[in-house]
Length: 387
Image (cartoon, rainbow, N blue to C red; front, side, top):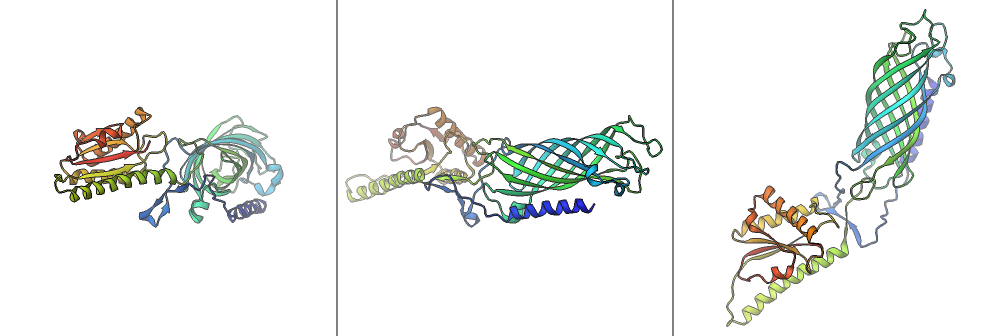
């Protein structure tokens, strides 16, 4: 038992050393790419949106099992170790919490009252909750080199192929196969090898019914320690990444779009000033509001950060009750009409479903020149989409 405690302490020490590492979060992007920040939360970085198909992983493990059930004090620890292997499949629901299923096949060696050592096989299936202690205690960081996870699981094990089990000490037939409910706790250390691979070390302790080792001893349960080493592969996410990350934007592209919006606003101011300087020209008062919404390259999904622009547009339409909305492209006619229509329809659907804007007030035009040629006396809201 002392050797097990020493092993676990050694594992914990290695994990703590890894936790103390300095994490390099330098981005591979050039300086033109900057993080999105949330002004309502002290300008904190905004996590990139994840879909159900994101952040899945699969692991392959090999190691050993040590049973310390009935009469274990009469057994040699090293001789009692038996090989084990397993496969796990899971998903990180957030940078702090994951669920996984793990199946293992392991040999086992026990001890009887006669100091003999029966052996048997066990197949196990567990459902585990993983808690990333590194992120919970130290905060999330991109591409962290080391992560320490706590494991809390429940499952079942099926025993078979008992050998060398004396009838005088056994409560079962040698050929019997039994299912046992089991619970377990443990720790897992993940060392980042590359963008897609981790090296894993994990140790778990499981508790099962006293009949698990085939003999009744003075103990009330039959526990065993499973230590596994292996590799974990992170599947590709919808955006091409393999892990959680912060959302980034192209500052140069947004600067160009803001310049165009500012040009249009200044043009409206200049037109009004010119009209006031020429009283012989009839001045027509109308309300025209310009807004901008940006989409990720190739995507028609409205990003969470862009929802505020949809809200601003909806408020403008409610404020100017006789205004129509014209959705168009910023700068020049769209080169990808299908993508433009998908994006425009995403905006229209959101305005209709979330803000109650009538569909008859929403027009989609891929050529901005048509929108700019609108009657200047007409009240309207113009929403520009990036190409």
